[in-house]
Length: 227
Image (cartoon, rainbow, N blue to C red; front, top):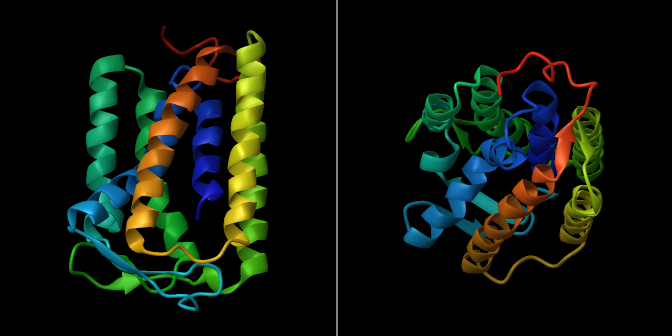
């Protein structure tokens, strides 16, 4: 999944409006933030294998530290625990924990049988990626719902809050469509460095426009969450 993970971050803002969107987005993307770094370090492995599934040219045969269910739960607990220790904002901690673990669940739905339960453990996957139309329909629907929930929880304070948000959504949707119709990457290093660069750009950008948006009066947490 790609924008399906973004959808979880957007939707989380409705539940935890006082948590920075950058953190809510980093949670469901955490496995994919760690993965390219671990690839470059040689601690995890993948190969370009067009036809491995109909949707993705990647053969993700070894990524237990970033993508196994047990490690996702560990990363989720560390991330949420640190956040709660600093903020004492329970909805944010819960949203972060669920967001991190949601990555395994969504990848289990979309990937082939490459999602490990724990490092060295059995691997599972329902294989949505074997249907291009099904994959795109699910992800686009999720993205639209997630963005809608974010909009119901926030409102722009100024032009940055409006236009930087719109540009962020448009860029991610555009990249999703472009990726589907692009040729396979030349090598795994290209994939890894693209992931690192995307994280460096997307998370500060998410913080930037979210910092220029206010909590909407429609948000269920707006009047009850601690400052």
